[in-house]
Image 1 (spheres, chains in turn green, yellow):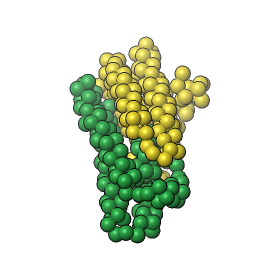
Image 2 (cartoon, chains in turn green, purple; image 1 turned 180 degrees about the vertical axis):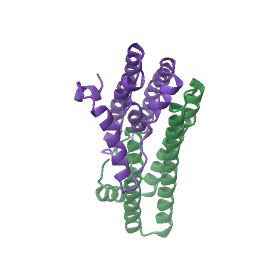
Image 3 (tube, chains in turn purple, cyan; image 1 turned 90 degrees about the vertical axis):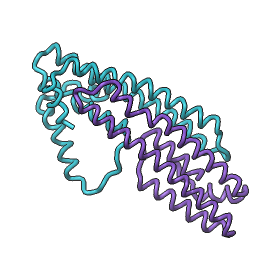
Length: 131
Length: 147
């Protein structure tokens, strides 16, 4: 989650490298490392579940951004668009940032409690890609 | 001055037609399904492509000048926002080097992003509404067909 979540959040903020394929690739890499590294089934399953939840949360935020883009394009193309029309496009996104950040940080904490320092370091070494 | 104007201060008139056509050709030739653009990139593209076309659509020079300035202001506003976002993104990236996430910093960065984006968005909406004051419905529709 550490790399996948934060890196993806950064991509969503910067608008650079915001690529669904890159995102999926990162998630796959993380899954692979977790599966290989954590041999205890219960701990491994919890880690994988946390990863899935993070993926879902970030995908939901990506969807909110896409919906905002569609709404804004419709307003831009409408001669009769009002300020209220424009505002309706961004209102849902505002709360969405809080949700995405909370979910990201919660998942990060859960990962920290699941992994010991050596495992954490191994994951960082294996997934040393930065956005 | 927008990036567009810096690179093309005296663009030949023929390019006014060529550039939008090129966008269409490139889009049509793209075999791969590209991921959807970030909304900011789409907004930028949508507005910047109209800058050079205003004079062709709006016949009154004084109105054309005003409309063109508004599109240039929009382009500049979005470029400034892109720089702000890049700066915040860079700060967050530094967090990747730490062993533990600095939660307070992450939250502060996201909050700043929201605040700055909101300010820019408010200004963008005002400029969009201003555009409509200087364009007829027909002119607006013709410009809208560009992208």
